[in-house]
Length: 146
Image (cartoon, rainbow, N blue to C red; front, side, top):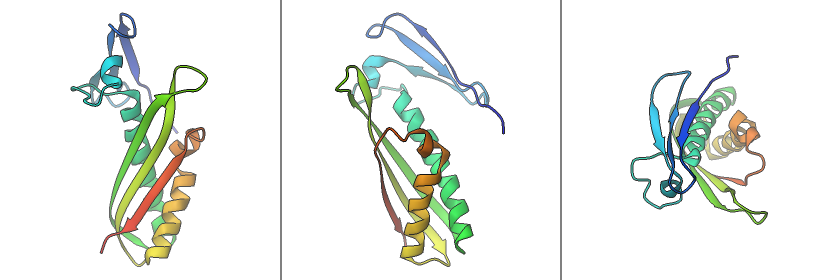
C-alpha cells in the first residue's frame, strides 16, 4: 500500500502566523490554516487539523462500512457519513481532540436495522482511521433511511 503525503508551510508565531497545507500526493489543493481561525466558530475560509481529520475519518469509515455491509449480504445504495471532530483544552496543558461523533445514514438493500447497526458498529471499530484515533472518544449515530 502506498504512503500519502501532506505538507504545511508556516510563517510567524501561533497567534499572528498562518500557513498553507498542501495535499501533496493527490495534488488536489492547497488550503489556508491559522490558529485564530482554528479556534473560532467561523472558519473564515480556512481549514484546520480537525476538519482534515474529520474528512479522513468520514471517508475511511464510509469505505469500511460499505465493505462490511456487502459482507453481511447487503447492497449499499448510498451512505451519508459526517464526522464532527471537537478540539478543547487538555487538562495536562495545551489542547487535545475531545471527541469525534460519526453520523451515518444509509440506504441498503437486503439488511434490516439490526444488520445495518452491527455493520456500522464494526466499521467504527475496524476503520483504520478509527484505530489510529483510539485516544479519542468516538461515538456513533447510525440509522437506515427508508
